[in-house]
Length: 555
Ligand SMILES: Cc1cc2nc3c(=O)[nH]c(=O)nc-3n(C[C@H](O)[C@H](O)[C@H](O)COP(=O)(O)OP(=O)(O)OC[C@H]3O[C@@H](n4cnc5c(N)ncnc54)[C@H](O)[C@@H]3O)c2cc1C
Ligand code: SF4
Image 1 (cartoon, protein in one colour):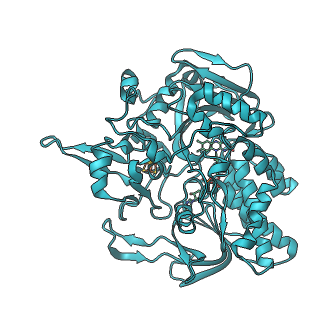
Image 2 (tube, protein in one colour):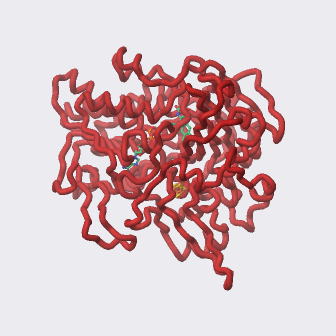
Image 3 (tube, protein in one colour):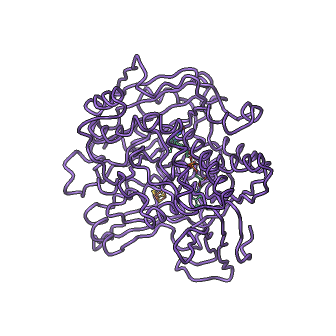
């Protein structure tokens, strides 16, 4: 893609090269191939390469790939290991209890452990072989609309600006890409998706989307520590029942590697809660540390996932517009899985797009066939019966678990489902929070030994995150006066605690005691937590220059 082109025109434009975007691209190419039609399909990805910004668990339900790929291509999918052991464990501070059963939806028989980065690289190759044009290293930061306000494409980010936003000698305006249909596949908390949801009121009548943050590491360990194919999920320590939802995952990979992480609901209240520190503390539990003994960390990363489920999904189509995957909230919290749903949504969106082009009608009325396809598919069957799951789990394992059981028996119906709130609103101020603050709960455990546990900056080093410093900060403080008065003074800069990459630093002047924010955007791993959790909706995450960000290789 050339920055000097005035306008690039394409039939179909996909933003985001994750499983949802790539499945859309492959299904589009397949459908046109079948019809003998030549159409231009263009996919833009902000990561330097496909997979560089991809982070998942990942235990994958493989069946949906059979719908997408030829039998040969399906057989050649680069899964790492078939699930062999599958255990759920309740952790207490120093002990553990292995459950004699799988919680509902957590059975992984027949599933595959994989690196999602590897899977996406493989899917990208297939898409390219089918004629899809893939452009990596281009961040898209704006939607383009016609005079009537309908989506007509996107614009990639301008480059060559200094920190103040002034044009430099190397300034280049971003490319304008016009498309008959634009498909947003940006993953969790898409920055464009956020814009169109607001503009077209796509979340009218829906519950607010709520999120979790997953902090993940990959380790090389001595032979015998873990078996490839082993799956362990934990709940309990170090999270507090009722006030902190989430749990850990430990997956055995081939060649004596372990993928492990802690996923924490962002609806917690303590402004000092630190998900990165919680993950480090979780690793010190004897049940977890035994897998890592004698090993070394290979990679670190973090990413949010949308957990609101069926009731929080916005309308995922409008005139000339489709939204797929995590951007639309296609994720099952009960399973901690979204990859099969991302791929399913991509397939159905592509089929509806092909039909719309054939009818020469890309209006929202026509593109509503995407919703019909979803409603008639396994996606509805899977997500609808657990539509109230995440909401009731706010009440803790006992009461929430009981209500979840009732829902399972009643097709998802349940009385007394508590309302959910945007995660930014659940954080309490320092003075309002009445629980024991995070740093007091774990005071003696917040020292990192740099062998088993690491500080955030070491984590960033292992994410290989890089950002060109000659650009305006991509983390925008929406209202600096309110940020100072409320986010810093009242909440004590909750951003410093929740950001897993030490981007936000509370600076206290030694003489005057005045508090201020120091920003380190170059550390950002693009997890989007600040866009979601910042009190008062204080931060907007915007994409930095294309190619900037983490360089994940096996996340
Ligand atoms: C910690 C964790 C564990 C998980 N475990 C599992 C699991 O075990 N099994 C499972 O099935 N699911 C799991 N999931 C969920 C799963 O990873 C997601 O549901 C899935 O990746 C969603 O796919 P997607 O294509 O919608 O988004 P993504 O995979 O996030 O891909 C989106 C892509 O779009 C790109 N992009 C975003 N914005 C822009 C932009 N403005 N311009 C250009 N490019 C852009 C991104 O760089 C990225 O490459 C997990 C998620 C997390 C965070
Ligand atoms: S700045 Fe925001 S998006 Fe970047 S790592 Fe920190 S919380 Fe995540």
